[in-house]
Length: 371
Image 1 (cartoon, helix red, strand yellow):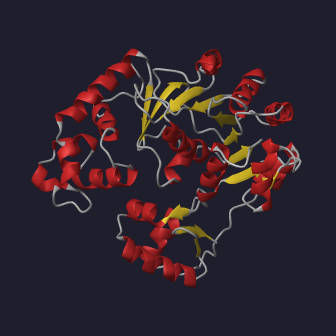
Image 2: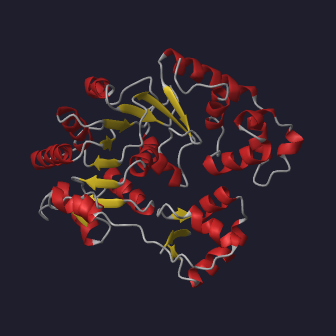
Image 3: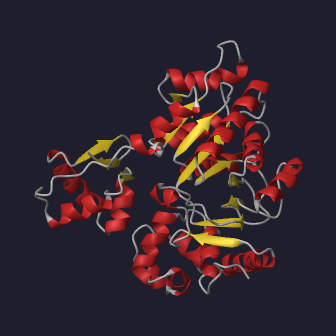
């Protein structure tokens, strides 16, 4: 049986089959009623009193069909020795916990360690050029010579994705593929051998249950996980439109570092990268040294977190917010509200006070960071 299957697993899976239920709502429900199992056992009259819970949602929670689907999926998980990472589990990717739209649950085949010290997502066009393949392979090779604690993430697609995975295998770098479908299949099927080879040190992961087809809209959802898992996203090649640009945009919204490999203006496969660089949405990447220097992965150049003055006068509420932001990662106000169990309206007032004390800085989209 899977290592992370518990008596709560059935209910964790069931939550993923309810339309419109994400981490924020699940966390709120668990805070009020107790745990994920109790969500399904709580009387409807009690659920009706919870803000944000519609009658439609209650009907789905009380539907036998939701638990039936979960039972089928749990049988698939057990039969195929998959790992399940619920968002409250210590093994859940720590970087994803800072993303407001993180998946409730991840299905994992292979090595479930997604919390490497350094994580790089490599993305790019499916129609890569020989130059793109060479650059991707060289980048992974150089990462392998500099770091022993690094993970390469991509999406197992044609082009740059599969090149990144195969280069990682060649140079003994653990690699993870984020899939846009269930773990009952490999898409594209041509990449099955590579996918199997990855399982020794890496993994295949997805938020989708078995039976989920690789539909077009699933790839956009997949891309947010590719972005959220990483410290940095590197776009090797990209046309003027495509999934790589979507991933880069999501990564920027998560305050991840985005890098792009420049190319000639006449090269169709470089149009997207050049556009990202020109619009300041990506850092121009020329060599591995520039990349590692910018990331602070050279210990001598590693940026030190800013320390606040020890005598800074903060109220009890302000100190709670300060501590919640003290991992130096920007956080959305909704995530802070969930963590601190505080209404957003009250939290905005506290954040304003901290802003006036030069403790926090507001960023676009309701995100805050420590100064």
